[in-house]
Image 1 (cartoon, one colour):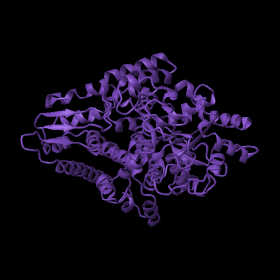
Image 2 (cartoon, helix red, strand yellow):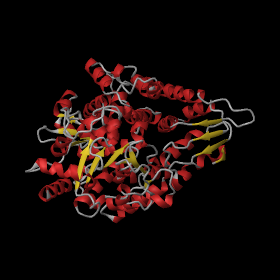
Image 3 (tube, one colour):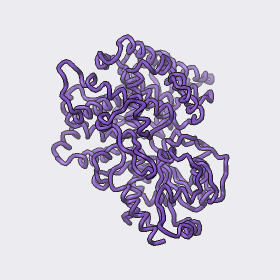
Image 4 (cartoon, rainbow, N blue to C red):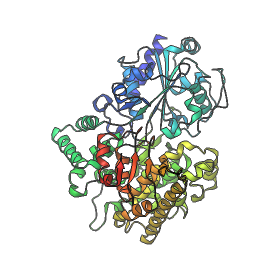
Length: 591
């Protein structure tokens, strides 16, 4: 057992030593770059959660159900969940934390999607984590006899193709079942009761059926202002570069707000030369930031010089369309890991891979050939959005279907929103088979990028890359969809009780539409949307609002015709968020 423990520890350490997410191509030691993120217990004061460490998160602090074994760590895309979990693995392997657990078994839900055989728990542990050189049965029996000494981690529950269900119960660890069924039974405690499980996920994938099986839930909220400062200084070996980046962030609070998301902070740090050369045209929106990293990668990895009169986008259009098709079909099929065959179907070449947007998937079974994934899931959404705009193969209904997402979900159609936009009947069958509400966030992120890329300020960018008539038509489609989505929300506002003020309790989908309008950066659309909103009180509690969302809210709400009371408690607004709300203060009679 001691030999197996040592082998497992060495394996976990090897997997965790270098940053494996978006910075993975740089072989950056995790200890050199890791920066703490804000950790929050739901319904607790700031004083309690700011000092929470890894031991606290798996320990008794914040426990809501003593009988449950699963700790859920939730956070938005890019909030640092995978890197946080990787740091937990490394600390355990180094003997620096969580030493109450003798064994730690790490799993990636993204990679478990590629396992199509039925497995037992023993096969799941040994085949996907670390194979014992001898006495497998005895080691597994030790795990069964001492569950409190074992920790399982599952990264990215939201990326599992199946949504969590509490139906198919399995109690016997030797019984074989599909991997997602094993996972659900491990989470709910039917299997391996007593083993502590840590699961990361985006909030939208956490269905009520899952919540009742949680020992506790904690929220990752990205970087604090001091965290941004720390990350930028760690990212730049030259202190002068770091100081200039931080100075430019302080001068652009909209960009500073974006940097609370670790993935966006990495992009801004990566593109510091482009950022410092922007002057007045400094990035304001998420789309601006992703276009900046796109240009940065092409300019730094391209082997040929830019031809006179040809834009960087034109020069690299083939690569963009190949990667865009791969991303689009991946989002459509709920796929985030791609085989060499998948790449070939989309025309992705070795030179396309060398641009750096795709990285080789780590920790796949040795039986597999090479597999690839995008640097980050948001990067995949971004390429999918570009493909929707530039390609004539996505069908007329791609954009309307994308923005009809929430209405479709209410009608129980699931998230197979691209079914009508793809020519392959086989793809449609896959969509129907794997329909899952967990995919909603990725489609929303894609729609947000589509909004930004179709804004007037980027119309010239698409010249010579696609038909200007087609792009303008898609821009009008997106504007109509946003207007229609807003109208649906406004129609749901109940009539006020006599003598009381008219109030609207907004849902997270409303905030998403607001963000899409902000990405378009067209005041005409914002004015049109707000001209129809007639309420005295706007309640936006529990809507995952941070500084980025505050910027978008201020941009849109300043066009309200009448003053409104704005309620934003139970979010993560922070000082930077309050500063972002200043442009709409004249229309707020209370905040």
